[in-house]
Length: 178
Image (cartoon, rainbow, N blue to C red):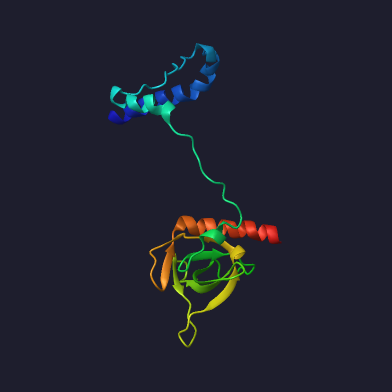
């Protein structure tokens, strides 16, 4: 007896669902203008305890600063500074090192550092005699400086932000030189 009532209920529901598309023509058309409108919200007001922020707005000083020009590294170079340099070779990028000596004619001696795998840590490169790899470079070969963190005598880190920025700059450089 329960089986028969469930079957009848199912058949009734099935007929109703199958008949819905035919009933569509009987529905009134929907007009977008009849739908409710969203109320415009007024700008929020500052609570009383923060009114000093709004009052002091007119007393703010003008923004001042200098435009960074090419050759800025020439005036900021110092021994012990970590730098990233431009290179045409795409192998082993980024090329980074530490300023060991400042020379005449806008040149410096760099001690090369290499990256360990894909980590953000760079270690000082050494030859078989345990001497540092160094080279003389022009100041205009420097891309970025003073961006390292967790500095030690033989290592430093570059943050993921700076690694990404350096690699983007290499892409721009490659596009210009090709």
